[in-house]
Structures are given as structure tokens and as C-alpha cells.
Amino acid sequence: MSLSLKKILTLVFVREPGKILLGMKKRGFGCGRWNGFGGKVEKGETILQGAKRELLEECGVSAKHLESVGLINFEFENEPEILEVHVFQASKYTGEPIETEEMRPQWYKESEIPFHLMWPDDELWFPYLLSGKQFEAFFLFRGMDVVLEYWIKEKGLNLNSFSDINKR
Ligand SMILES: Nc1[nH]c(=O)nc2c1ncn2[C@H]1C[C@H](O)[C@@H](COP(=O)(O)OP(=O)(O)OP(=O)(O)O)O1
Image 1 (cartoon, helix red, strand yellow):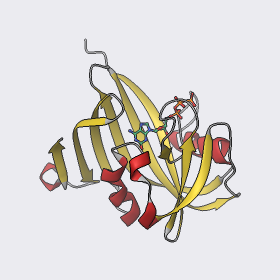
Image 2 (image 1 turned 30 degrees about the vertical axis):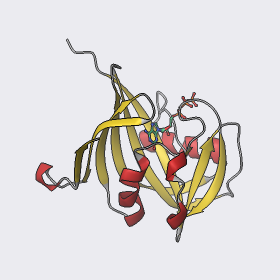
Image 3 (image 1 turned 60 degrees about the vertical axis):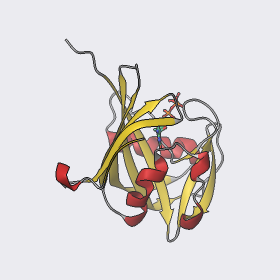
Image 4 (image 1 turned 120 degrees about the vertical axis):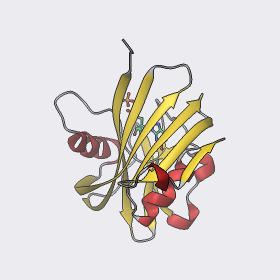
């Protein structure tokens, strides 16, 4: 019997024309990196509910509507656990972003995203997010900094249509 442990996580990007809201993660997994807002989906809630809850808890923003933009599976070398991250964007929301114990929010121009201070995979799939293309992706990490293998494809397209398939 193969033992595959899947953890379902969410990741939400609040958008304004030409700008995107990122948060500096102050603790836990990904600490010290800019990212969207999100976390583990809890028992008894849907993925969408989990995404909205985490966004509110982490930066005080209440999404009126979340659009699904991507699905990313992360594997870590020599670790059985797979992270399934559901990526959303929110362009309709209420509340001004506030700093919390977990995150320090900041607006960035889409042309000035600090990729060198983010997870290394982000630079590879952000073009899909920013251009509004739904995508699916897989990344195999060695530790937290090295991407060993990955693929990214636009959702709905078949294997021959991979825009990126790579070993680094
Ligand atoms: N390689 C990666 N690239 C990326 O852009 N986001 C990633 C990522 N790996 C994980 N994430 C996101 C998914 C999720 O939003 C967040 C991690 O979830 P959590 O904040 O729940 O982690 P924590 O360990 O802090 O958990 P809590 O104790 O529940 O706060 O990081």
C-alpha cells in the first residue's frame, strides 16, 4: 500500500488594477517570504471557505468573491507528504489590509514583484496568475530553496501543450 499524505492548502491574492497584495510571512512555513494569504483547510469547511477564512485572519480582508486561478502540487524530496495548494484571486473585497501576527501586508506593482524574496516557484507561475490564465503545476523541491523538477500547464490543455516542462 502506498502511503500518500496530502495536505490541502489555500493561497489567495487580492488584486487591484496593476497591483497585487502580498504578505510577509512572519512565522511558520515560508517565514520570511512574501506570498499570498492562506493556510490549511480545516475539517468541516470547504476549500473556498478555508481560503476566505485565512485571508480574513491573516490580513483583515473579506473577499466577496474568489476566483479559482491555479492548482499546484508540491513534493519535497524524501518526504511522503504532498501539499495541494489551491490558488485564488479576489478583486472584490471589503476591508483595508492590516498587519496581523502572521502576516505584514503590502501592495506591489505587478511590474515590481519581489521574486527574490519569495518561494522560488512563484516566478514560474506568476505570469499565469497575472495574465488571468488558469493553470496547474507540479514542483519537486529539495529543501526550501531548490526546485529539482517542475511542470506548469494551462488548465484544460493536454500534456502536449505544456508550456514549461523542465529539470533544473
Ligand atoms: N512553494 C510554495 N510557493 C508558494 O507560493 N506558496 C506556498 C508554497 N508552499 C506553501 N505555500 C503556501 C500555502 C499556504 O498558503 C502557506 C502555508 O500554510 P500555513 O500558513 O498554514 O503554514 P503554517 O505552517 O504557518 O500553518 P499554521 O500553523 O496553520 O499557520 O504557504
